[in-house]
Every structure is written in C-alpha cells, then in structure tokens.
Length: 89
Image (tube, rainbow, N blue to C red):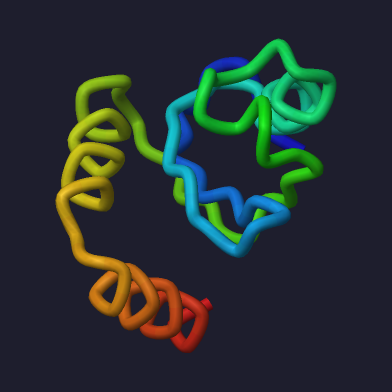
C-alpha cells in the first residue's frame, strides 16, 4: 500500500471506538504491529484496530505536524475532520 519513500499520517479506529493517530512509512506493517500488540501502548488494550484514514506527505516533518494537529483536536473536531477528508477523496 505505502511506498518506503512516503511519509504517512494515519488514523486508526480502535475496538472501543476511539481514534489513534500516528506516523509511519509503511502503513500495512504498522497496522499489523498495532494488531499484534507491538504498536503504541494506547492501542495494545484496544485492538483490533483498523485504518480509517491516511494522508501522504513528502517529508517526515509534514506528516508529524499533521499527526500533532489531529491529536490536539477534540473528539467532535476529529469526527468533522475525518468526514471532511472523506468527502474530498
């Protein structure tokens, strides 16, 4: 799915309905890590997770900034963001 040269910001939906935002260069590998309990501490007790959104950036810095901005949003704002991004795809 993702090429090694790409920098991705991704959003997972956890089994409890919560969202987790992260950064990776290999989306398939990273989602698999989350689902085997080797990903972020937050997702370990909330798996299985599924990727519901991802964006590709040219630089790691841009992707990490997108992740940071997403994590600062309230839950309703995250839902609006995801719905808005879904409409533009």
